[in-house]
Length: 268
Image 1 (cartoon, rainbow, N blue to C red):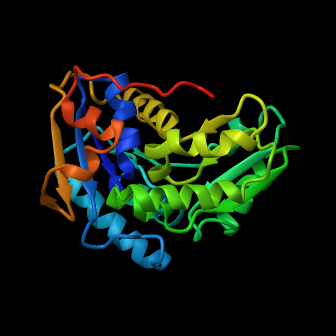
Image 2 (cartoon, rainbow, N blue to C red):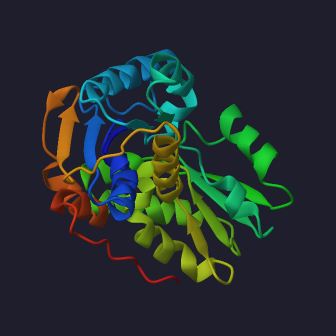
Image 3 (cartoon, one colour):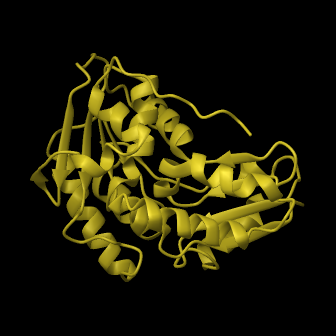
């Protein structure tokens, strides 16, 4: 089995690590776009063009599924990507986990990039899936870029800023950018003092990984086992994960190969 993941940068590590946990034998192709990132400020047409280029580079490695491990690309490019490859190759997008976060009816905060916060897309998800839960949208300027650079000081400042604007008593936090899942422990620690009881964080990686495996099975693909091999593409060129990825548990898990395990932070 071989699974390809596409993102502008290292946000794809969250879903890649989840896939490592579910199928350690699966070969992974990580296709990012250091030449064109960040995608957030780009127009929808530009995002689609860059996502298609990364996906073409990944698809050349003949994966059994193509995971769009990026909220921005899923918003703007998913239809074009599916038109290009489905039904032959399953294409899986990433959607913020608003529905499960709102299921208990407790106060919800959605941490997302400034471009996504307040967007018609996110407001539509809130309308369709939040039910009676009180939802606050929290823009997180600079957080994704800081995570991408591995800049601990900038990460801390961006997390603290967003935490200060998260209403006291918030019980559920949706991580609306895949980069944020790489620092979920820092987000939990920052929000916990003012949070409601039993604070819970919701990323998309686990659900995306499970959906990818379901789609592969439904398509009758990936019947063989792989060796847990890793292929890294940077704007279509062969590359390596690099030192920044090694700063995050998910990056270390993906780099270490199929025998590694991911330590899970304790629940606050």
